[in-house]
Length: 102
Image (cartoon, rainbow, N blue to C red; front, side, top):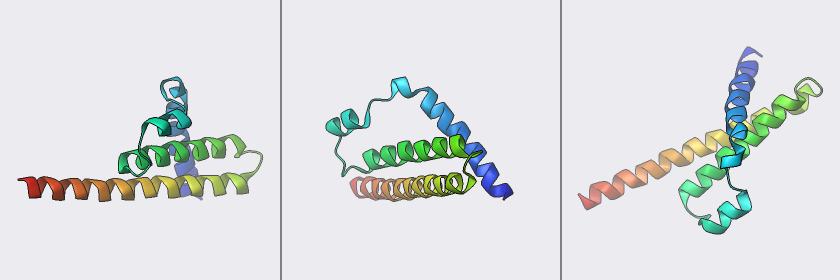
């Protein structure tokens, strides 16, 4: 229970920072029009944005619907974990490419 509350707090802080600077973020439609969805960097960005939205929604409904809030935070954590996995895979590919070029 303490772990869940801790994660909610951390993700709420991260998402509030992310959403507070929402004016600097372009809409997802505009972003996808300019970027290749097959690119790992694009996918990482989308996973992070979606994770922040779920964390924010979790924080909003925490007092009224704790069960849904917990589900939202689990989805947020899952998206964030996938983002980190993809970052590791992408960095590994970059390291391999650099090694081959060297």
